[in-house]
Image 1 (cartoon, rainbow, N blue to C red):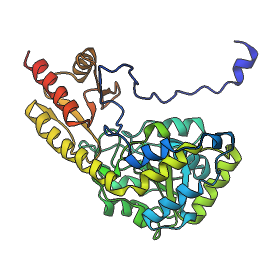
Image 2 (image 1 turned 45 degrees about the vertical axis):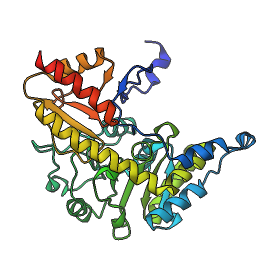
Image 3 (image 1 turned 180 degrees about the vertical axis):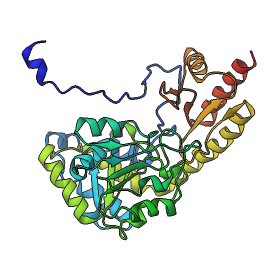
Length: 352
């Protein structure tokens, strides 16, 4: 080994979903919204003043913070904005998870949690989800250095009811509890309303799923002003200009067009519920998803075999070759036409 190699930090990185190229494909593997952003976003994009690009963006993201605070009925000092929810959560890990006690998150959850914990040297434990992939809230009634879980869960789509979310928060007043709500708009009740009741609660959401802006990388957190102030201190110690100017402008317009936002949600939820019926008819089983994807296993055919066959047909879904997950496919909800093509292929493949 070369001397300098001994000082390299070795980590097992997060593996993002495949980003296939080309027009002749159906992409149902990374939970993107199948519909375009709001027409207001398109209008604002066309009106961008390119001369602004020579200047630094607003480090406080003031305009975007303000529209988010108005939308959720909270103060500007209760909102933090970052480069996608991944950036927001990473900042939160650095800010709040500094105890010698382990943080807690489910064994089946967003795999980036483990990566961040190991990257930042944070001890952690992973309470095992029950057989139906639900959280047993009592598993989190113990001493800890912090708690984080996604709700609805990724990759299962299972929603923990808000009263059980609150029970976990109420039993953990000595540590910060982070609820990752990347998929909450597709069928759950947000914990944002609890942030005024519990000073230790941080709720994280994203523009990448329900607001059709994954390519702009916008995430945000809502919580007590003391939490937001602390996470800002870490941000300004790391990179003060995190959000680019177009993201700040276009994100603001996306929030303001609430009618379009809800129309898209309604279409996705309707398509998801129809997809559940079709999958059951084809011999699949799955937890009841409240996200924009379904986590499905077939009663006879291995998930890996279905995944490979779909991929050869240029239909991309997500397959996790991991314990407890290796017989499931995570299928993003696409447009009605995309889902029709998926089911036409599955019907033909499974009948052979």
